[in-house]
Image 1: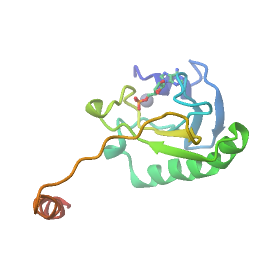
Image 2 (image 1 turned 120 degrees about the horizontal axis):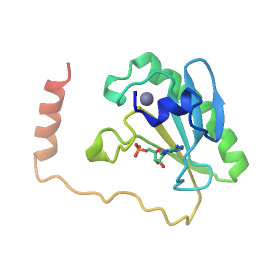
Image 3 (image 1 turned 180 degrees about the horizontal axis):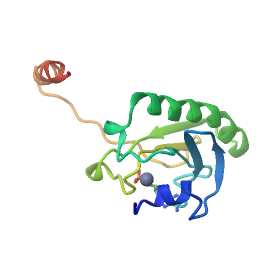
Length: 135
Ligand code: AMP
Ligand code: ZN
């Protein structure tokens, strides 16, 4: 399979690994948003979060929680964002499910997404539709 993360996991492409266990690998992003920006990915290939089994997501999250304090300690960052770009329209470039762990510091200049407002009743109607669509 022509997947860059599968190649990293198979050892065919080098990475700056920070942790691995039987199910999950964590390594530094090659183009970091901030110093210590790490990626957490399962060793099995799943295209995105939607098709990743819950047990695998759980294993990924355990690794994220395990490495986060170490990343913060070493980079002297007090906080971090966890991000998932799920699908191309959301900015997913590598179609192998992964979490981004992005260390954050006060005044680091990284902007958050702009917020909008719902019109009267719009949020309630939307929530009702989504609730009905949850299967
Ligand atoms: P996404 O946009 O969520 O698919 O993120 C993919 C991330 O993988 C990007 O932030 C890239 O910088 C990163 N990336 C791509 N190739 C490599 C690589 N060989 N080693 C480490 N990170 C990579
Ligand atoms: Zn893959």
